[in-house]
Length: 357
Image 1: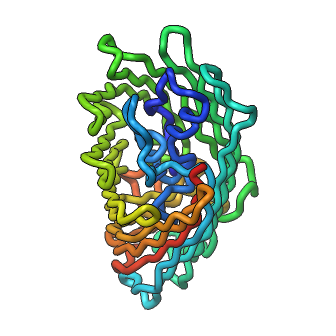
Image 2: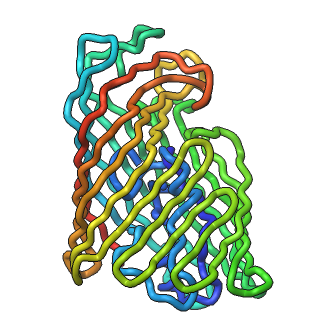
Image 3: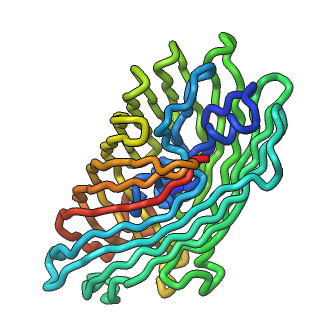
């Protein structure tokens, strides 16, 4: 599911706390996700594979960065008409995630993080999957736990990986074939100019749009303190022209793309707007083929506010317009789709509580 591959810029000379601040959103970009602006499930590899890059070396973290090690909240989309069927479909979701150091991080030392995630998506509908003639599942669950390791090397490089294991299904842990995992290995080393960086990675998750091992290679270009671009796979851009504005965009194959703009309105308030594709992927317990997956897909444009509450906590409320919405089954995202259920565009609201340290 939304798999945040960790191939990002962890400054090799940063202190332990700085490394923690530069970690990607631990739900895995997906991030990037169906439930909220800060992804909580691995349903979209973009958030894991193209996380927030963090500030270029030597610049302070912006007050409204995208990474939050603790998040909980919900999402709601009212009923809309289902194409070709005399029924409607509504969505609601609840989610939680946490990432915490397993040992106290030390300056120049390795970092170990424990990760836990939970998500529940309800599809309130009487729609039928048109090929299998089965009802659309009314509840879909994601439960995952795992760890992330980051180790700086003597030559200034960074090596590490992430492993998450759990279940993404309408009946979690019902059978061994319903289990899923997300595994990432990465190696980042400074470029010859010692300002830029090379990122090498290997990503795998059976609940991703590309359900086989996918290598990554990207060059992180930092021409000045306001701009950072990851050129390659995954791809990402972050531009901070001043202390108030932040623009980010990232892409991971096949159709995982997100672009966000943030504007600080005061010491405790920020405005945000984004466009994103969302793909949630599950294993249905009663599927006929072991490698068949159930997809929940849409595109969305959203805007909202984030209010800082103090002690690292923030509350975020966004309203979105969802379109190009569909459910379907298939062994991969691009071909052989069956049981396609399309439904009308509509609105969505999300509310989440974040703790950013």
